[in-house]
Image: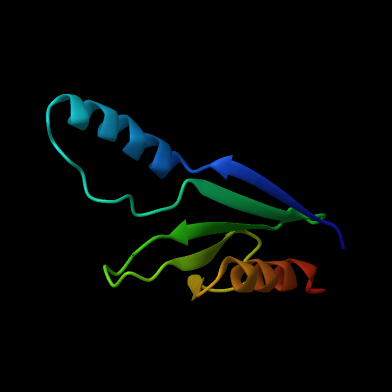
Length: 100
């Protein structure tokens, strides 16, 4: 089964950068963003989709996590988090390749 991966700038990150620009102009400093710059959308031939995003220092412990979330297809419940991009990508692809 073919898996298509689209890499795009995450909307939350884009909005964060907008506020950083205007906050800096006013002498204010914002905390770090809650998501990384990019969002990866993985899609299979059936139209099932999984979002993969980076969560830099999400729990304020200095650890970056990678999160997957099913957008289309009910492939798994809720969200799943991983220590590395490669682990998250591998798991997302396994979900999308699974024969239902």
